[in-house]
Length: 185
Image (tube, rainbow, N blue to C red; front, side, top):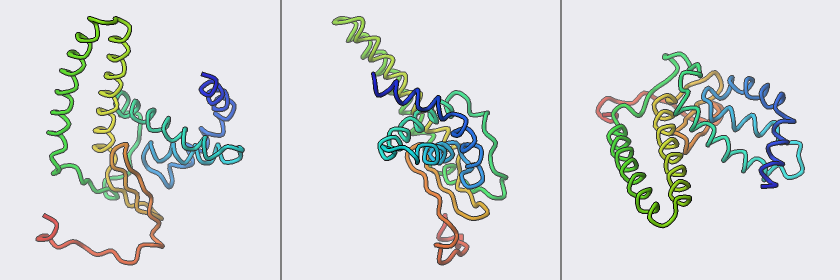
């Protein structure tokens, strides 16, 4: 509990700097998760235990991004269509997503009923955690859907849901070439 309160007060103290860094990061990081990681890196860099803060703030950024993508996907502006390329449309991820949602809803109900026989408190704690996992899954799907491959001014930006993100500067890319239709399909 003490660690959480320390991080919360540290975040409140540095919030103006974090917010400014979050807005400035939009130039190099077009999507929410990347901007949060960059704002955390800049904000917590001067602190003694910055490695621990950055790792923990990375987990928190992923959680906040999941909630934001799941409940408030309309809050973000996205890069122009001519700079983005989608890789999820023909991936059948939507079918997997629906199957997982369906299985999780059944599991939430079954686990709640099973635990209710032993402890009401444990049943509600498990239900809350399961609903959070469901929210995370919805946020991950929204992040895949709303965060395509982006070609920026100075880098190539990839984000695969809430699980993976990378920004590759053009300087380190040796070659780019169009894909032949027979290879790409």
